[in-house]
Length: 367
Ligand code: HEC
Ligand code: HEC
Ligand code: HEC
Image (tube, rainbow, N blue to C red):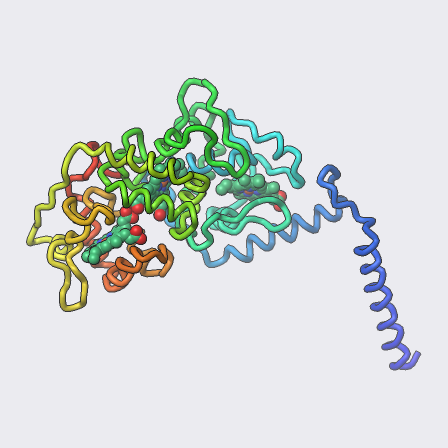
């Protein structure tokens, strides 16, 4: 055959292949039903594609320490609210709906062993196309995913009793119904909030969860509405606050704010650079004294920072530096201030504020 003949024959085969593929797609012969397993070859292709995709895309991610205080417990409560309905947990069966999904969400105890923490963080942040595995609700809050990863790494070793303890469920096997798929709570939101923010809103499950006791009602209500409508991004709080109506927001804000029993003290310490920033600011760089807005006597629309953990304060300042946190008018007041602080200054002012007597009775983010 001549060179030209070969080209024509090749093109004919390609065109025939494309026509057959188009016919297959348009004919509707392929069964998309979720009640029938894929063909073995389809399963193999999808699974291989998925594994390699996760491996490649998670290159370059570096896990922070996963044994930080409170990380596993925060991850456990969020897992129980957001993931257990699909994946189940020790002593908690998955929803009957999850059993009817294809692919069926796998129990994660065995599955987590084959993924590194970095790969798990990529899966939890990005979800998986065409499987029903959702992405993290707030795509720019990859920092939050590590709590869930820390918990997943513990999952293979824990029994039902330990799971209930970590997830903040009552220790007797009394029935607290598992939330449904995509629903944080059904009847009583306050019980759910307490699992992370503590019974009185002061002693929280860990330093990344802010204490609510003693905060002004107006600030708490605004924060909740901003999570509910996504103005303030957090894959944990957007999930917990979605669906709360204005009446519930007001009731929860009043209930938590009322729990303060002591007034924060703000004694300056002239030898501490963090104290100088909090009380005097850095006027030559346009950084105002933090406590003019953030002490007990200040504006009831602003949060009080005394007794918040240094971890939480630094994290929130970093979110503004990275242009992630909130685009409300209030965030616009704080954003330029946070962006003028360098990381060292942010750390020292956070450490000072964390040492001040907290607004709530029992202290801030305990482990
Ligand atoms: C609506 C149901 C659903 C929810 C909710 C859900 N997942 Fe999944 N998840 C799935 C499905 C389905 C898969 C299987 C994907 C596949 O096989 O390709 C999966 C896969 C995974 C995997 C990979 C498992 C493996 O064997 O490779 C991890 C890890 C995971 N999910 C973690 C989570 C976490 C953590 C949450 C909560 C933040 C969560 N999932 C919420 C449905 C869900
Ligand atoms: C799974 C744990 C968890 C649950 C459940 C939870 N929270 Fe939170 N909450 C957090 C975390 C973590 C943050 C910090 C989020 C961020 O980085 O913006 C937070 C932040 C908040 C804030 C902002 C406080 C501040 O100083 O800016 C409010 C208000 C709040 N939560 C109220 C609630 C209420 C009310 C509920 C119940 C409806 C609730 N939370 C349920 C973990 C939780
Ligand atoms: C002019 C008033 C003002 C000054 C001065 C100010 N802030 Fe703020 N700050 C705010 C407002 C308003 C918010 C609430 C922003 C929002 O809700 O999005 C806030 C929020 C914060 C938060 C988040 C608290 C939480 O509960 O999530 C941190 C952390 C913070 N400020 C730190 C500082 C530090 C550190 C300084 C001093 C360097 C400072 N602020 C100075 C007005 C101020």
